[in-house]
Image (tube, rainbow, N blue to C red):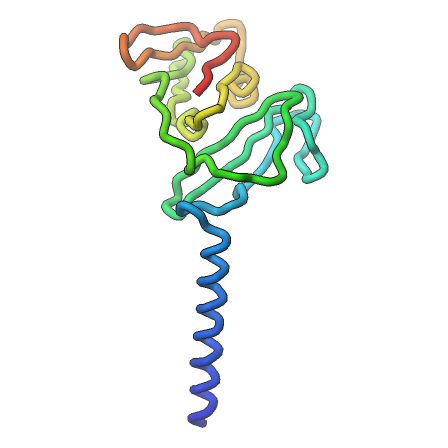
Length: 163
């Protein structure tokens, strides 16, 4: 009976060692080396690995989580290339200055500040294409953001905001 306990301890040690090695190779800077999720915001397409570019009228989202549960997303738009190999993660990039204090629709008082927080990744562009996929827009919708320096209210630009 004693040899069974020794075998179980040996198995447990080998298993722990293998998991530790796996974690070393899969994590870098506290983040998985692959995105946790990839999907399209589209009425016409569902994401699969065969796509090399974002289809028309579609927004591509890449979700990344770190061990602390923080979420960051990379966004790509129609015609842009979809990566299949990654050299860095959004968590490897420096934290950008937030371009707004508040962003949303003043007519319905819809606050998009928290929604856009996960898109604050250097290189991302927050375009109207993304906004239109996230909320329902009608003729009364008035998208604005409040500048963090001047606290002035600005119309959301048609060409978007680059982070």
